[in-house]
Image (tube, rainbow, N blue to C red; front, side, top):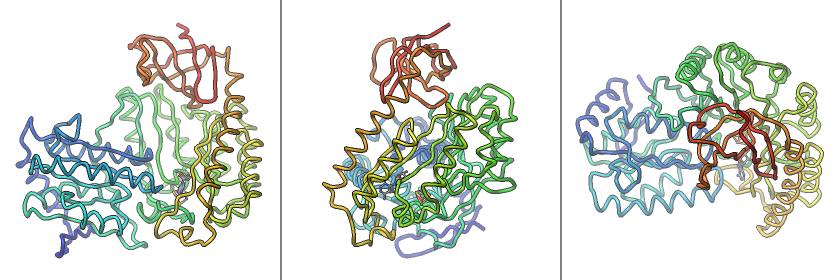
Length: 473
Ligand code: 5AD
Ligand code: SF4
């Protein structure tokens, strides 16, 4: 028996495995081979990209082909993000635009997936104001996609899944087909959900409690990917380093290090409170492990870190940085910072700037605090006026730009191993892009044959955001 509760405008029922199989059969009979196609539009983080690949894989397994645009699709899945308000408004506006697609073709089924589909107020809004949306499907329940499509076909009814109670740990559905969008890079989700409840963050509410995959499943998946020629594996989890099943995260990294073959291993996103000594020790030469660590700081003020419920202070953060650099002085360090968290004084903000200078991150992803309904910080009365946050953000970006440029400058003249991703996105003819071991973006002239291969590139120029170089045969 599968625990998921399906709510059809009114009636509720529990989905069994047999019902799920029947639903998939029904959809397969309904799909017109060569004609019915699916379009998945993904917003947000890498975890969502990985979920998007599973949604696509599931839809293809039901017989849909792949559409290049929503206009030519019969199944449109909007895989939304809820981390900041901007992401939600963008998704809602795009969903609004799909009204005409449904009007033109009544066979079109539109589903809203991703984190927004786990927010009760958004689900209610989609149900009331977007009648052409057939269902919502939260991230923890992707495997129910066939059932939801079948409900629309069978009863023309719209389905809205109820988010689980906060104490429920959703099951892990192994074996969902994945349609990977890259041939040489792959996301591997190793754990789902988050138990941390940072006061600003919606994730624990929309992605549920932490649960980790069995290490054997993870290793099997990675071995398969490496055998198929994948050159870069990124382990994913909202709190990747709190992975715990039959082994802990550092042990998992070591076991992946024993897999033969030519590939790079990365992981994200880590929480400073869960960075163990054993994990740090992995950077002393675990095979495949790239010398790169993304470690969100969020604020350089202990007072704000406590208000954010982050469970570490600046001293602890700095000690991790120090130990990582003691093992590998060249390790690339990147971070996330929130600007304008409620109650952030000029002094708190200055402490963040000072810490950025002290650590010297290679790059920083910075965000203006966005209140999320249902999180504690959204209720705080000391919200920062938007113009103050914007001004602080500008100062932070200016400072980090100088720091990143300074970090990249010494790379000029060095020859670095680069995994080539493909042609430059700016379309410059003959230019390819790739990433160094540290994850830095490199542009270099080369043929299309270079895509998906490791090459050596001598760095000729460096600025804050990218490197330029020459291919060394
Ligand atoms: N407002 C702004 N930024 C946020 N983040 C998470 N929640 C919020 C929010 N409410 C940022 C954090 C996190 C990154 C993925 O997004 O910095 O590390
Ligand atoms: Fe959000 Fe904090 Fe969990 Fe990261 S650790 S997903 S910031 S609650």
